[in-house]
Image (tube, rainbow, N blue to C red; front, top):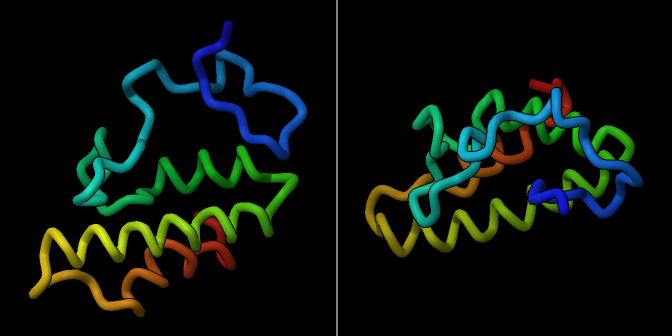
Length: 103
């Protein structure tokens, strides 16, 4: 059985040669929302490229997915860093603003 998560809008799995090694995927470390691999604010560039690839056939679904993650990140960051959490505008740019231009 394939341990890699599948996107419900896709009807096939990503070929193994295109997937990063297990444990090297650019995923968020919650509740601080930094990339587990590169340490940058998530979604980092590699995560954005992967998301664009995974949701290539479902851009609206990607936007809805990222909007949900943006809300989750906002709540968690406000709890973890109540005085220095990013503003809603900053979170919007970080999670959704890049979608128009790609990575």
